[in-house]
Amino acid sequence: MDRDSSSVSDGSSEAGGERGGGCCSSPSTRSLVDAAGGNLSRTVSDVSTSAFSEQCSSVSVDVDHSGPFEPTAAAVAKLIARSSPASAAESLRRLSIKPRADVLDRRSTDDELELVKERFSKLLLGEDMSGGGKGVCTAVAISNAITNLYATVFGSCHKLEPLPAGKKAMWTREMDCLLSVCDYIVEFYPSTQTLPDGTKVEVMATRPRSDIYINLPALEKLDAMLIDILDSFQKAEFWYADAGTRSFGSVTSSSSSRTMSSSFRRSAHRNEDKWWLPVPCVPDAGLTDKARKDLQKRRDCANQIHKAAVAINSGVLSDMEVPESFMAVLPKSGRASVGDSVYRVMLGADKFSPEFLLDTLDISSEHDALAMADRVEAAMYVWRRKASGSHGKLPWSKVKEIAADGDDKNVTLANRAESLLLCIKHRFPGLSQTTLDTSKIQFNKDVGQAILESYSRVLESLAFNIVSWIDDVLFVDRSIRKLGDNLKP
View 1: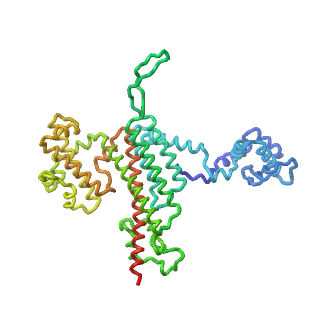
View 2 (view 1 turned 30 degrees about the vertical axis):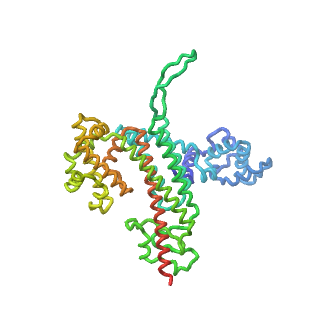
View 3 (view 1 turned 180 degrees about the vertical axis):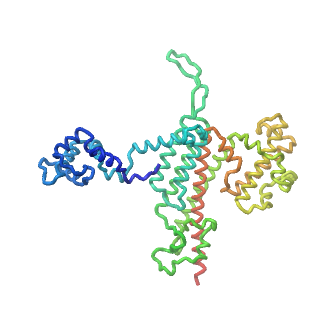
């Protein structure tokens, strides 16, 4: 919604010229043409507005008629001077004159209203602009809208700096529109109502749904805290260099001592696979103790926000129903899913340790970790389905209660697979969503759960990025201080 409003289309003036001039479209302006004596070789829109503004500032009865355009200019000036500011703007609009301050500095409320209408129209269409009814459901449409809004506002942010005012306004305005749906998601509960004659009757009253009532205010608070963390970097002791051409030391130091070699630039990057990102730079002596402590404090705060967002997101995903499409493609056995070696460890050990099992596995990248998580999660649901089938297809919570004191192999394997999956997610906090999570989001039809899941997911991503950016600055600070210590005699 953040569109450029620095200019206004001149189509109205061109159209007015074809019809004999835009100034002849109303009786009041027609009288102006009569007062000018018909000597008009240009439309009024071609006359500079500076002449009008000067005459508006000092309204005078005596007008100089030395030029062919002065009578019309004087008449327009009197018209605008007698009008209120609102009618003056309307007069300028009818005359196809651009009110420069309004055009360059701010956008009209009508334009914002039209943009909001456009957003909600797309949501109602379910991302199917043809209107043929082939769009996604409302829950998926709102989830995609929140995800796309986050990508638009924060997708180009790679530095610890305040968010631009335009993007901050866009994020606040559009998130308020998307979250306003939750105001109408309620649940019924029995209540009593007293009639005017004193009779008490039982009625069903409404209140916000419990999951939204608990999680949505918490997410909004986490959102405000993350924006505050970014705003706190208004004045910082570090800065950023791009493409390896900037200096790495202080601005006042000599260029010979500030030039950064390629080897040191490689050491300044914590992630070699993201070489295109800007590199944080610190003074020659490193950050001050106060700045370092403030950075560490903000990092701890962002890390706690990340954990809270992950907890909310995990809770919402666990409450979503498992799609039938996911259950239909599960393997026939959990052993075939996790492999023989992992299966023997999970079944044979008296005291199962998921950390020890992860240490023995060859997981060298996030791709391997995600693949392992998918296999373990699939095996977990295979064993859950078998355990539920042997107990009359009861829910999993009831099956665990019944088999708590028994010796059901499927229940034991399912519990151990769940602990192994949690351990994988804990060891790889930036892990992408598993196949089951993406299936739940894709086939979910609960609008409230879709909003909570997508909102917590984008806040989780933003908090993780802030922690990573702070770690980059602290890493460079340690590197520059270590380099300085090595150069000392």
